[in-house]
Length: 364
Image 1: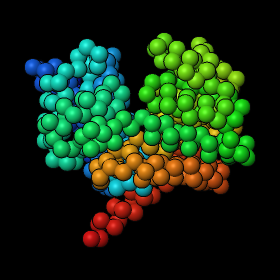
Image 2: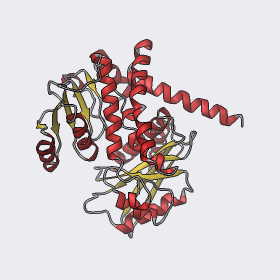
Image 3: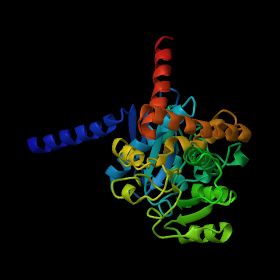
C-alpha cells in the first residue's frame, strides 16, 4: 500500500513539474466515455486576455506525447499573441484520436461543452485535424469559438492568411540575408504541403522561386507538382537550398537535422520547430542560418481569427499580417545587436510586453 501511494505521489509531482516548466496557469483533462472524447485544454497565460488557440486532433502514440504537445503549443500561443500586439493570452487544446476515424459530431459538441465550462477563459478554433465544420459543431454548445465558415459570419479557413504571414517573414529574411526581398530564382524547400504549405507554394511560385516539396501525402505532392510546377524530393532537409520552410509538425530542428541543413534561411509555418530552444537556436546562429521564429511568422492565422472575434474584416486581418515583415527585421536587428539567437530575441520582445501589461493591471 505504501509503495502504491508513493508511486501515485511521484506521478502527480511529475505532472506538476511538466505544467510548471513553462509556468502554465491551468490544464483541463476532458473525458467522455460515450463519445470517446479524450482531450486536454492548456491555458498558459491570460495576462493579455483570454487564451485563444486551436484544437488539434492527432493520433498520439502516448498520453505523454499529447501533454507535451499541448503544453508547448499553448506556450507558443502566448508568445505569438504578444509579439503580434494582440490582446490575447495563450492556450491550446488537443484531442487524442484519429481524425479520419474517431471524429464525430457528438464528440466535437461534447468538447464544446467543456470549452463553455471555462466561461471564456479559453476560445477555441480549428487546427490540424479539425475543420470549420467541426467548429460549427463546437459552436452549437459554446460561443467561445472562432474559425467559423464565412456563411456563419466567420473568416473561414485561416490557412491562406497563415501562409501569407510566413511569406512576409520569408521575404524579410531574404532581405536580411541577401539585401533584396525578391524570391525570384531562390531555391525554396517546403516540408509539408497541407493547407498552409500549399498556399505558401502558390505564393512563392508567383515570384518565380524554384520550389521543392516533400510530404507523406502523395496527393498533396501531385497537386503541388501539377498545379505549381514544384519538384518532389525525398530528402528535403539535406537539399542544397536557399530557404528551408518546415510546414509540418514541430521539433524538426534538432541535433540530427541541423548539421545536415544546406540553406541560409529557415522560415516555415510549423509550430515549435526548435526541439530545444536554448540549444538549437544557437546552433542555427553559429551556422550562419537566419531563423525566422515560427511563433511570429505563422501568426497570420491567429491574427485572422482574432479579427473574427472582434467583428471579422478580412482587409484588416491582411493589413495586420503584413506587419510581420517589419517585426521579423526588428528581431534580426535585436539578435545581431545583442549577439543572441533570434528565438531568444523574439521571446524577449514578447515577454517584455506581457510584463508591462501585468504591471499596468497590478496598478489599476
